[in-house]
Length: 456
Image 1 (cartoon, rainbow, N blue to C red):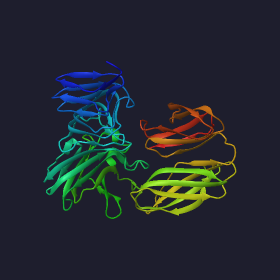
Image 2: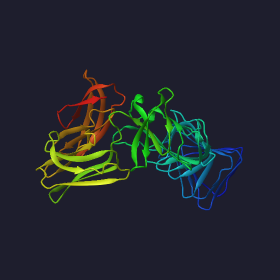
Image 3: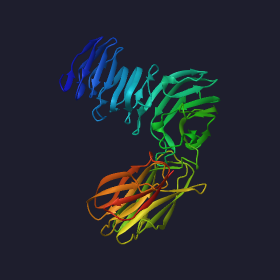
């Protein structure tokens, strides 16, 4: 078979077709017609539809070991599948456009990345076979959507999307959207899954929700901490803790009863007042001898104010300015601060974000430079950590360095080679597979300094 298959017309009856390499392409004006319960297997390749695809009752399966850069669904034309199968022993299948599925999204092996696009199951589609070995992801956004009539549902799981709904009320036509983005990625308190439930009738529901999840979606959260949260539109689109009436870490679900209205729901930690602020950008630049510090939050819950701190050595910080926070918001909020007299050489900046209850968290550190850079290990954030940390260091020149982490016994547990550039550098490591305890960080080739990391 050719590396790229361009079809003007194709018919398959009880036939299995395998396409290799670059995959299957339907050109503009072309037609791909699947007759009856035909099977089309695309192995280590993509599907690009610029013409017309008529699925009938066929099954199209993406398989092979290629990465999502090779295994994808794309094209300029609307594409609807009857059955779409994901059976990849390695790699991920990725969307480059929205699609619809009228029967089954069949998960066997490998993950299905929404990649910012939607998969519409309509009123008849369903997810089958989803498991820890094959599940839906979507860090870049996108949702799986399903519509269903719900009249006094009893543990109904529409489209097998992983949420069971029980209510004595008639909800009418209901749209359910499942997304895979962590709702507060900056704080790490919510799992990588949420649901929007949009019923026609949305009052006095007295409903129960049982929300399922996979361990890979936990985002380092302890399962015992998981509780149901809702994004309440009145007042002000703020996250509200609902709690949990039942949960099972073995069966991977959390349930909440006596819910009056449906909105957006996620599972998140209930420890230490989670979901305060999602900081999506923080940076500083030197303009005309002044430092301009900018940051953006995607939403805020009970946020009180920000303090901008600065330092000449990256360790000892002092207050530069205090700026009031928006407080409660579910839209992007932009802030700015000016340092009229940054230090000679490097000036480091960080944010101290205060909540209304007096608790606070620090941001990562950023820097500007009015002179020559020196080689120095600056900081590690967050610390303590549940797993992921961001390491900041400066380098006087472009050089190869090694990031090393040792445990309390001096044993090397992580080693990472970095091609450092001149100036401020950042790299990330993840301690999620390490036991709780104390660890020690060095950046060989930059500094002899040792930083202590506490793993929760």
